[in-house]
Every structure is written in structure tokens, then in C-alpha cells.
Image 1 (cartoon, helix red, strand yellow):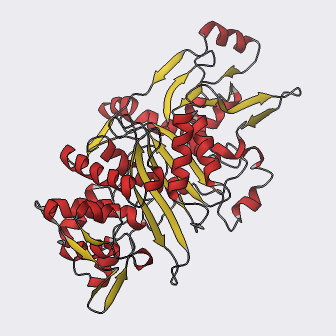
Image 2 (image 1 turned 180 degrees about the horizontal axis):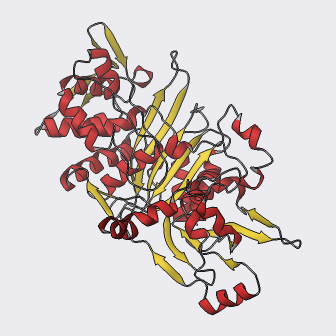
Image 3 (image 1 turned 90 degrees about the vertical axis):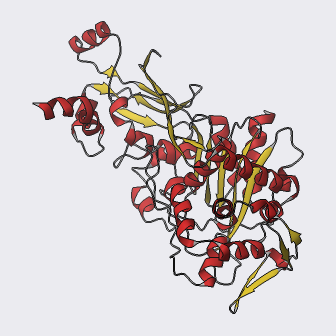
Length: 445
């Protein structure tokens, strides 16, 4: 009896909401699948009843929201999957539902109002152009996901017709790169390396390094970008210039066990909060690793893998004074007439770092934009703190992923962003250029 009470109170909704529960689809015999909208009510998915009584699921925004909203044919994905139960539940006025029962008509399912901002989503989608990659935009103070873009995309309106081609697509267009993509983080990982160094060296403000464009240790040489000699640098300059030589030096000074502990606290090798499907990020440096692996890991190369979704959480944490808010995609559930059935509220997940650590990392990230590798974002009507990254993913170093992670309106952060452009032609597109277009869209329109 005790378990039955526990099941009904705690576990029943999880079982009913499970995507494996075929009972959900039986609800479609009595309920017209509800709509999905952005935060302002723009329709992202809806069911239209045709003249012959058949139903068509329509996605007015097509490819732009394909991965995050998902599809409801040939199985389900995205919000169409996670919110299936809500979409097939009708909280219409009970007399209306009673009348529909007598007329043998379907009731209209509830509407899922998301946290997504259609303007930001479109800006991110357009900024990526024809490139592969992903963009995630979050509100640091709440955890609301405002945009989640993955490219290449697909048209959810035609999933059934194109199913075989989509499943055999060599570009993996069905894959949500924002949450499932596993990328070498490049220099964006230097934020984690910096935090580990700060924690292990209370006198980190006294750090000094003379950069001559390369750093060698035991026969292994790490070069700065274009072998640029940065000269004498403190820790701020090292982050701002994204100095590989300095960070190779820093990596060799770190206690690897403590470094792994810091990475774990930043949610590497860990479950991530939120309700979206994701792949865990990995930090694989062993405590007995050699100098080469240690230096490569310190600069974000090595075997470390991370998703844009995870990096968005890390910079959101920094922007929010060290506290990570649980990311979420659904703002509220309403009935089809707009009456709120359930409202989702921001929820604190965990303090990943102290407020003083977050404040110090923010200062370093401000320097990146003020005079460092992210200077293209300076001088705008808004302020930005961030970190660039160029991850080499081919042996000859000619194929790179271009990253940018950071947040805007630094004194009162509004947007946290994570951008990864795969195989980027950095002469025409970078993580910074994509982020700038998203910020410009938000602040200038």
C-alpha cells in the first residue's frame, strides 16, 4: 500500500510521460494534439484538421526550430517527445469536453509555451549560414533556454517522406549538435584550466610568464597562434591573448587530481541538469599523464570533449555569480484558450564555484573582449565578457572548429551564449562573428 501511494504521488507522472509508454498515443484518439509556441506565442508546431477529417502536424518555422521542437512522425523527438503527454492532455472547460463527448468530437490538447525566443532563434540560425555547428543561448539568472540551433537541419514537415534519406544522411542532419555533439573545446576550456590554477595557487595574481611564441618541454613544443610572441604576461593577459605557451606552462604546474576534481565540479564526466537529451562531456587526463597530454589538455586540445549546451552552462554559471540555474525549455502549459494550467519556475541547480571565483573569471573574460582575441565584440552598444576558441581537429591543423562562449550586459548579465562552428573557414565565419550577430539582433532590434 505504501508503494502504491509513493507510485501515484512520485513515480506515476514519470511513467505516464515516458516516451516508451504506448498508452500516450491512445490519447490521440480522443484529443487533438496541442500546439507548441515560443515565449511570445508564435506557433512552432500545430495540428491542422483537413476537410476529410485527417490531421496534419505543421511546423510553420520549418528547419529553424527542427531539433529543439522535434517531430511527431516516425517516432518523436525534441519537445514533441518530452511534452507528448501534455500535448495530448486537454484542460478545456469541462462542459465543452462533455459536449464534445456527446458529439464524438476530439477535445483540443494543451499548448506548450516554451522559453524560446523566435527572434533570437532566427538570428542564430541565420548567423551560422551554411556551416555545420550549434548555438545555445540561455538566460543566466533563470536557466531559460532562449535559443537552441543545430545545423545542418531538416524540415520537420516532411520527415515521413524523407525518412530514409534523413537516416542515411552523411551530414547527420537529424543530430542535435547543441546537446549531443561532442567537440574538442579548444581555448574555451582555458576557463576551466584557469579556475583550477586559481584554486591551487592563492597567489595567482602574481603569475608571470614570458611568451616568445612557443613553449617546449621534454621534446614537445606547443605554439601560440601564428607563433605570435606575446611577451611578458600575467594571468589576465594569458587569458585575453589565449596564449598557448602560457597555458602549457600553467598546465604543467597543476596537480592533476585536483584539476580533475575541478573539471568534475564543472560537470565534466557528470550528468547535466535539464530535461533535454544530451551526451556527457568528458575530461580524460589521467593523474600519471605525460607532459605532452598535460599541455594539450591545458589548452583545450587533448581528449577533452564537450557539447555547446554544456559550455553554455559553464558561462551561465560565471555570469550568475557561481550558481548554475537548471536549464529549462518550457515556461508554462496552457489550455487551448490560453488559461494557464501549470507554470514552471526557475530552479537553482548547484553552486559550481564561489562568487569571488566567478567575479575573477569575469574580469579575465572582459579582457578577452577589451583587447584580446574577442576584440571584434568591443565598442558595441552592449558589453560582453567571453572566451574564444579554435580547436584543431585534423593532424595538419588546417581543419578547425571555431568557438565563442560568453555573456552580454556584463554588470547585469542578460544572455549567455555558446557557439561552435564546425570546420570553419575562419576568414569568413568565427564563433565571435556568430555571437555578434545574435547579440546585435537582441540589442539593436
